[in-house]
Length: 482
Ligand code: ADP
Ligand code: MG
Image (cartoon, rainbow, N blue to C red; front, side, top):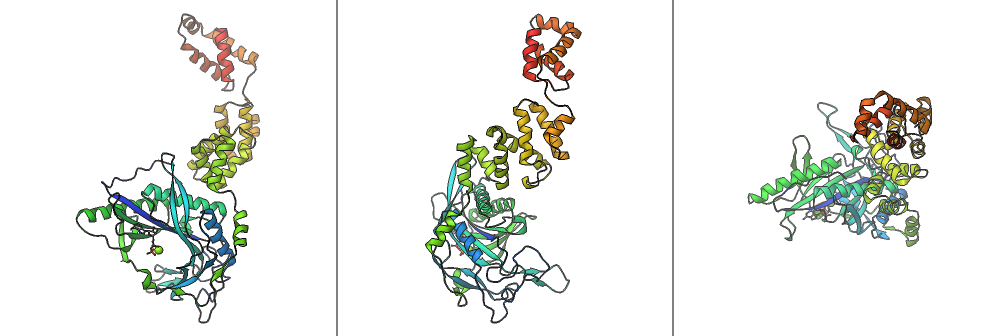
């Protein structure tokens, strides 16, 4: 939760609604058995349905439907037992059917909510308008040949969930917090791999400005943002553009825009269609989808622990702060890692070492927690040595560095390098005697009342012990002997 300062719009308030397209984690497409995997040789994941051969018949993928219901339940949303697939008609080269099969009047999921955490630690509820299932389109490639454009239909028919928020979002910070939380929830239930850079989670931003308390203004829609950074930048750039237009007496056109991260501007793509431009009508090739309350209840009872529940449990069970719990839960792999470490360590210490020491080293080496060279058991072993006072905190950090670079275990490194902390009073006493004997001047000054020299003596003894003496014992013995 790094601090993001929202731009000052001089009295204008942003009104934002987000449409997120999340690719459903499913082996096959929404209405065919072709592979829905990312990549692949162009046009190799295409069935006659995805290529829209005349007479083809779509068949609904039950796994995709189940994912949509799961997601709806995780968003505390109303699940509709009756929903309808509709044709959204438009022409585009990468849309061979001439229409997209989507849901319009009767989506599978109705109203729900997402809780976001604000900068000051408080929470806000953002309303969900609906969630519906739809097919993705193919891809036009304009950079393969000087004269021709090519079409790759591998994505054609890939199942997407479109999750539409209410216009409840009021800042770029809230927008990124919303998308992060939504991605977090989708990751926990396994409904989407939430890989934004591969296009598994794409966000459209609907944004308008108003004076606080006034009616909503006209909105623009900025399409297809692929990272949290792009979402934040596009919002700030578009809000600023609208402010300038409005303050110079102009009006905002309802239109679809594109964000250019290089020129740092949004550009008009097309004036916004209204729903009637698409001539929506129920797809006659598909029956209405009727699901039972029983099936919904079964899916509900099989939902895993969700992020908000885990945050609450980490605070109650382990006594973590809201901040620590939030940071750990924001990454499912990190939360699981922490729980393993925690099983054999004091939770507060485990949280600290995972968040500060482990995350710090992972960030530096640009690794995710799933690629961590130190396993959860490995870190737990290191922290056990620390808690038993076998090694000092300082040494433990060095050992973690070595574990990171060599993959060796903490016990092995400590043994091999002889790093065990010395708590044996006679061994420490011997070093102290030596330091006192060879520094008579400093001893005299200390005895004359310069107590600040104690720190200097501690440093001498620690150095002579190779950093291995237990500092609290050194302190205690030095005071006695001086
Ligand atoms: P469309 O079908 O044209 O995309 P919707 O009614 O589904 O329109 O709304 C799309 C998104 O726009 C929703 O997320 C909604 O919250 C948001 N929205 C609606 N009105 C406004 C507005 N005046 N300013 C900002 N966002 C808005
Ligand atoms: Mg829309």
